[in-house]
Amino acid sequence: GVCTQELCSTRDDIKKYEKLNATIIAISVDSMFTLGKFREEQKLPFDLLSDFNKEVSRKYDSLYEDFP
Image 1 (cartoon, helix red, strand yellow):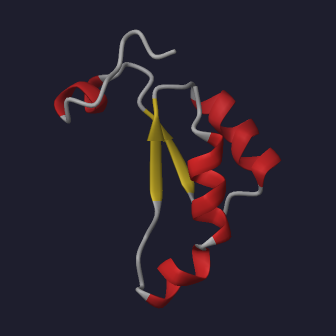
Image 2 (cartoon, helix red, strand yellow):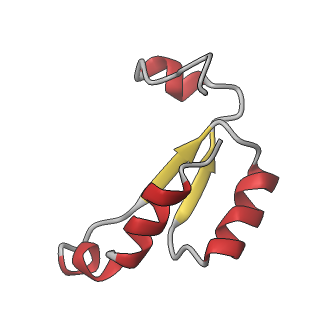
């Protein structure tokens, strides 16, 4: 699922990233519909990308098939 604590912490620290002229992009294996709703509910000012087919996660060896 979506890492609520981490993404909300990033949201709360957004000014730090803006000062660095950084672009924040989060990626998740959740569907784009789930991510869109989550982004709206949490008022996240950055994009959430859907890796629903898990291709990117596999390429970066960051996919946990049995995530608790």
